[in-house]
Length: 316
Image (cartoon, rainbow, N blue to C red; front, side, top):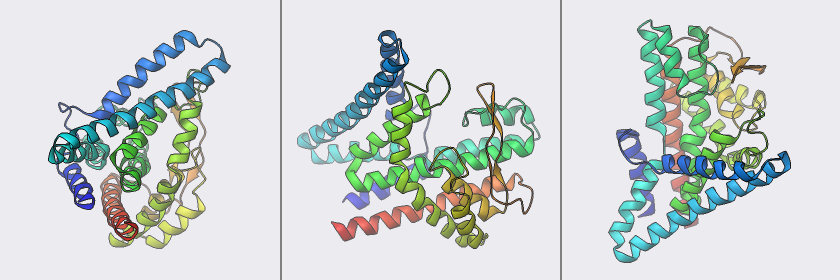
């Protein structure tokens, strides 16, 4: 039943994506983070206090997310097993973000294809943290490819990994960890203290899924008749050419598969951040690479579902 439930959740994500008018637990988690952070900042005024406050923030958000998810599923299952399964399916579906990521990337692709640089920059700004106001077409395309590659891990592969490892409560706790990192896990003056714990634990949570993505994305490149050998090679060679210990794995693998160069300097919150290049510039990146990266994501995600299903079946 578990394999059927998680496979159905995967298919629902592919078909439905994330309609904006539907209720979504990740938005609730985000609102909770904002509220708890505000309360902590009101009482934590020194830098050491903010480090402690960041740890409290992590425990409160992640702990309550796991507990509430477990209580809701267990309580509804006690009332009616099928009601509990239905809610479990819905929660599992909301944890996955492959279709949502694809839709956001295609919004940028369509804007680029229409020749509207201003709209392309605006669409990209919705999915990246960097300043997009001065980017040209090549930089916009590179930003989309990097985002899809990176989020293949924390949007699909890692949630699937934790679904099969510890069920919906653990996977939802992972999404809380990931959401904390995306909201407070920055190294600038405002967040470096309160977001330190969130950033470090997010790195730890993605450690295994990121390395699995290297293999799966290289295999996906072979399926698409891209350069799988280069994907495997560059994925290993440039895996640490990124400030994150995990993001370099999928980005480098995709760069190798496409034969393009990713990374490089970018502006974040008004500050220029020097980042190393990832991959070899065998050719210039172009708009079609956005579609290819989306296909790599979907194939690697489907492979992850099959792999984790087999491992679950073997060990259960």
